[in-house]
Image 1 (cartoon, one colour):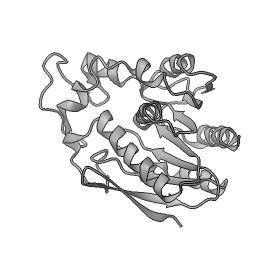
Image 2 (spheres, rainbow, N blue to C red):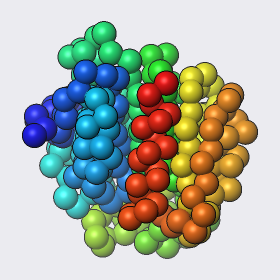
Image 3 (cartoon, rainbow, N blue to C red):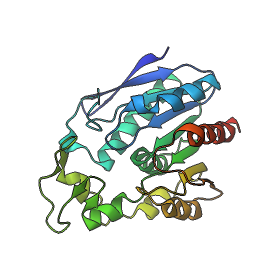
Image 4 (tube, rainbow, N blue to C red):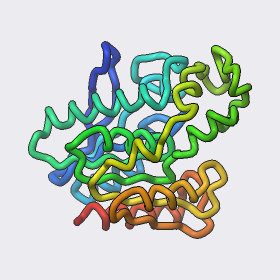
Length: 243
C-alpha cells in the first residue's frame, strides 16, 4: 500500500502517494485535467520493479485534484513550480537516491521543463509529451477549448473545469525547444504513431534536441495507453530505468 505524500509550494499543499522501493526515486506527473490516481498503473509497476515511486495532484490540475489551488490559476509554468517543490521534498526525504522524472502528456512537458531547469535529475521519461501546447495556445485551439488567440478571455473554458487565460497566454510564443534542450541526462520518449492529440512529430523533434535520447514509437497507439500498448510502454520504461 502506498503512503501519503505531501509537499508545499507558495503556501499550497500538494498531495499524493508514495510507493516504497529501494531503487531510484521516480516522480510521476499526470496530464491535463488528470490527477495522480491516473498514474497508478505506472507507479505500481515501477514499485514492483524496486523503484520508489511518487504520484501527486498538480495544484488546480484536474477536477479530481486533492491538492490546494484553483484551476483558474493553473498553467504549465505553475505546474513546473509544483514539480520543483515535489522534487525538493523527495530529495529531502531520500537524499541518497537518484531522481527520475516521468511525465504523461502535459506532465511530460512539465517534467522536461523542470529537468532542464535543475541539475539533479538523472533520467527523464516522457510519455506522449504535450510539446504541442505552445502551438495550440498560439492558434487558440487547446484540446477542449477554442478562443481568439489575439484576445484571450479571462476564462477560456468552464467544462470540465474552469481554465484561466494565463494557461494560454503563458504559452503563446513559448520556445519549448530552447527550454528543454539544455537537459544533459538520459531521455526516453514513448509515443504512439496514431496519437491525434499530440502528434508524434513533437517527440521526433525532441529526440533530435536531446543528446542520445531514445524514442520508442508504438505503432497504432493513440493518446493514453491501455492494454498491450500500456504493457509494452511499461516494459520499455522499466528496461530503460534498470540501467
